[in-house]
Amino acid sequence: MDDSPYESAEYRLQWYYLLLGVVCLVFFLVMGISSVWAALTNIDGSFKRPILAAWIFGTFWSALVLLCIWVILAYYRELLIIDPTKITQHGIISVKSIALDDVTQVKWGRYSMNGSVLIRDSSTKIKIHLDNFTRTEIEEIKTFVREAVPEEIQTGRAELVAQREKLTSRRRPRSKNAVVTKSLVFLAIGSIFISVWAVEAAPQFLLAGIVNVVFALLLLWNLRRRRKKKGDKMIDETASGE
Image (cartoon, rainbow, N blue to C red; front, side, top):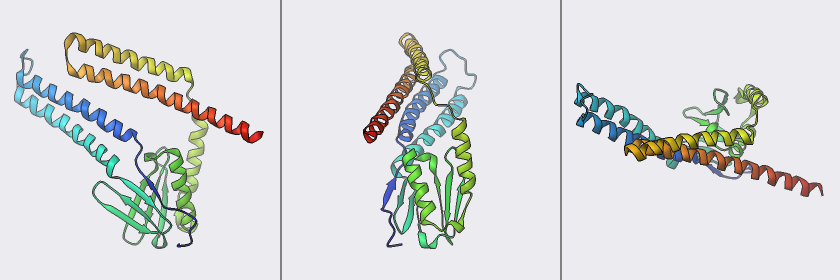
């Protein structure tokens, strides 16, 4: 494989995993602290067993906080390295590597939007969840595996391609008006939460409001990015035609 035309490449999780982890971490922390405090103080006497309620709230929100920390760790630690001789996958805890000459099976899975790739040798297996990467990176990974590994040891690729074509034909592009409408709805919900926070001074309402406002801004930013990308593509096609 030393004469392979491919160059080494590294692929990390998409940035929204970090955003999701941080936003949810802050939200769950605030909700957990406020609910435990409300149960322990039991100001209005609504909890018959405040200690038990505090334990239940604390356990529930702590589990969600740990899940958020795991997602944040995954963003920083998980890494897929592809080079002309081997594929290496860095997880949160372990590191796996398979030489391309030792691959015995490649199984293309189709139980997610973009599918997955399971690569095996005699003692190790690496599963690549393609939904973790951008569209460009997905195509690069799929092309590399498809061409670097003998076709006779690959299974499920035709089914994955058929599923992608079926999903693509059904998918309707989101219009500008639909995205703007959703953004306005989230902005309105966020404004309501922030207004309630201003009256009640409850931090969980402020956090819920901020989350909705941020999500609305992300929708608008993504719309602008897609329209800019479409415009640049039209300019390139016009220039190439001339």
